[in-house]
Image (tube, rainbow, N blue to C red; front, side, top):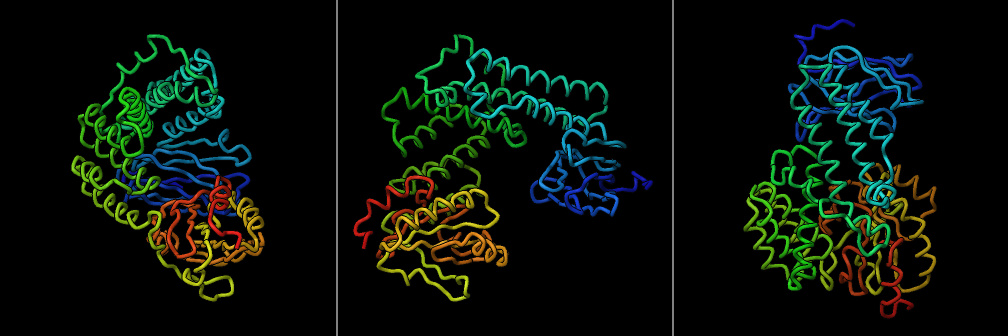
Amino acid sequence: PSIDNDAVNGVYVSGKIENPKTDFAIFRAGKGDSKIADTAYLDSAGYFSVLIEITEEGFGSFYHGNERSSMFFVPGDSIALTINTNEFDETIAYEGIGAAVNNYLAKKYLIEEEMQLTREELYSMDLLPFLAKIDSSKEALTNNLNKYRAQEPNASQYLIAKEESEILYGWAYKKLSYPNTHISYTGRDSVDLGEEYDNYLAELSLDDSTLFKTTRSYSSFLSEYFEIETNKAINSDSNLRGGIVRLKAKLKMAKVLFETQDIINDLLNRSMKMHIQYEGTSNLEELFGEFTNIITNEEYKTKLRKLYDQWKYLGEGSDAPAFSYPNIEGDTVNLEGFKGKYIYVDVWATWCGPCIRELPFLEKLQEEYAGKNIVFISISIDKDQNSWEQMVAEKEMKGVQLIANKGWKAAICDAYAINSIPRFLLIDREGKIISARAERPSGKIGEVLGSLEDISG
């Protein structure tokens, strides 16, 4: 249908999907709190149309079935999209006002897909083939961008600048990561890079807060650069080794490497957050104070303090926060009821792929410790109780099956500082925490359980 573009406060998208997987497609646009999602319903022939109400240009996405494609939306555009799901990436095409930039992005994806290797394949390469690979990928992506820019002299300068940065720092991240990652994958002691390998760093911006906020590959690059420079400092100073001392090294290196406070804030916030989540808060009070004095972002400070306070009470020997949830029969089950037994808790959900992959290992663990002084409790945070009941039945899941059914707002998530799943907890016979981030069933939990006193009953 025709449309008056000047009267539209948004982007009009219409099109046809051949061999549709579902009867709808989803378009997402905007950023942060202003991000919106619009659903376009297909008619019986696969046609659809939707008005995406946005007020400024920006990146977005098109979703259908389990496939997605990046898009770029400019208010006033009217885009016609066609696709055959049998060859999703190869057939997606755009016409109309706003078509050129989206055809550029579709072509970019095909180039990336064609050049792509697994991480292990790429970083296991010897130096010269590796450099040839990342250089040719960078060249192909740059040529595609230059071709689009030549065709569209009035192209969005925001998009052009962002794409240039993504290409450059995506390449730089791979080059920066190569030495350590190559050694890790190949088992070699070292790799001879030659004297000029690091010369490329002189051509890059190493302290740009705008790029850090807007360009994913720059953020990844700078984070890796920070880690590598911290490792160099640690290797040259034996006083900087160990968990907490590593944090001290990061505090020092952040101030040495960067002048931009936003970057210092972000890198130190990530470092402290990761340490607390994986190492706990033991002996951390003084250094935590130093970090929060250097960090000027009040939101980061508030969240770090909350995380610190949570984990302070989740250390080994602390009282395990109580929980009480219904089982599959609807009866309420309390943590208190298992006193006298060791307790291994799996916090999971039916929609969580890594959680599902752990289930066979958990089942094997349960069989190995059947009849011993340990109980296995699985707590689902699914909001959809039917999905949970169906999976418990289909997979004949053993142990105590409970449901918290409030998603991330479940009380157990707050009590145990859970922001990713699966998460495993190990509690002793007195209701004290052994580990609030216990080993997974697929990991070394068997060794941990085997070392527990009187677990055999």
